[in-house]
Image: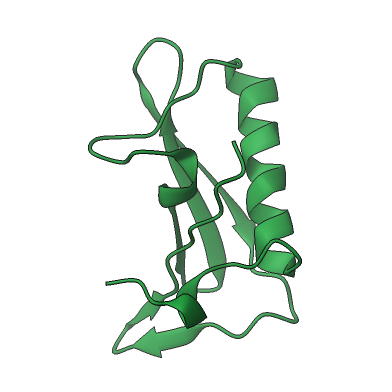
Length: 93
């Protein structure tokens, strides 16, 4: 379950990176990218794992794609066991 301190703020470096990744995906795969599976918006399609932000989405043909980027150095990621946990709710479509 996501709580307020796990959400990327519009002024945070994590938010900026996520928004840049959405733009990059639209440039590379077309403007009609969409959330995967049961996600309601692209902001729900991010996670952080092992020091990288991962963004998965469906392209205009319905194929699932994923792009990754390094977590900004000034962002703290909390870990749970062997997995980094930091879901984003960026709402920046």
